[in-house]
Image (cartoon, rainbow, N blue to C red; front, side, top):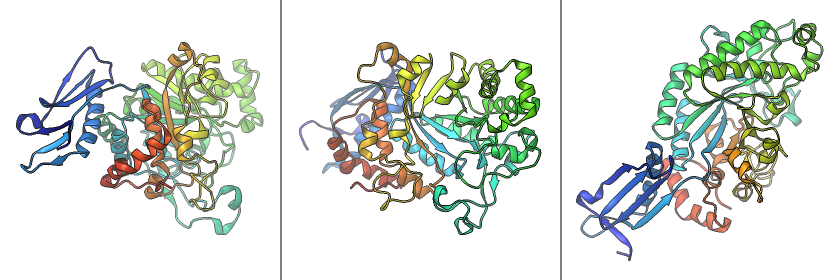
Length: 460
């Protein structure tokens, strides 16, 4: 037995747990010594995080000649740098079954990440059951075919399409069960209903929500659709009713309303949009987007929740208690400070895990970009000279996995891991030297993923 090892036998083999007011909400202290193993935390959430660390200590356990468990003696006092440690999964472009999400929750918990953001609606599919609007899932939940290959190279080629429809959706009961599953592991689910753009699937189901006189289908290719919600009473009623039900399903404090990539071309050519602008004293079509975000905020704030959206919401002058998810180049914490908004750092340069990991010639098809493991590990969520005010505005860090080019669970795991391992250390605040990080991956951590049956891109 090596110096510092501890024998756990009899009563000492059990992990004793307690909660102390002297520790922060997610702080914990794990002590393994001759008296046994004890875990103290500031809350139940802290206990969950500490148990994750305890499981890693047990990974290093051995058995002595007497059959007793021997583990390294440790004293770990730990607390995250950021309260928001998240991953977004795009369930719209390719549907992500409940079983896959449960597995992902387990892996997030292992990495002490605490938010799973579900992108539930987009042009290519509507994935959440809404009472009173059955066609959202019956029609909007399925597309007749899907593009094969990159849309910038393949669009318009008949050989570039699948012959099978793609779809699926979550019932409200399935989502509630998933929320309970996540809560038991310290992972909170954040819903996103993207509006008023990225709405082609909803408009395909209910054409009266759109700006055109003729019906359209669920979008079969990628890119940004020009089809957006019309500024009409039925569209605003739709927004209110959908968000009210989503609030009822999800207990999370935050509700994501997207707000990104909203073209104004249909509003510019619409008589009813011009009349709406005149009635409300609007001077530009972009202000119609503000009206939708204001309506969403009214519903969300009335329920005591917080509106969160992609950083384009600043163009629609969002209410001051909104949260901006910073994804675009140049959208950083100082940007958020200038607009007076709390924020989550989600920059596409290093935190978009649908980007290529190495040379595109040797990697599976991706949307583009390049985010190597080293790039992700080097994420700088705050400027080097960040002020206390800027640090206070930052809730945390989130990685994104858009699924246009990620059709299977195997591909999803290949894109996520081990890059998400790097994100977890950035979000927790435990980054070390990159060479040390890679060494730790290869000498223990990837074996944990193997035991969980989680796939990953091999270290190169």
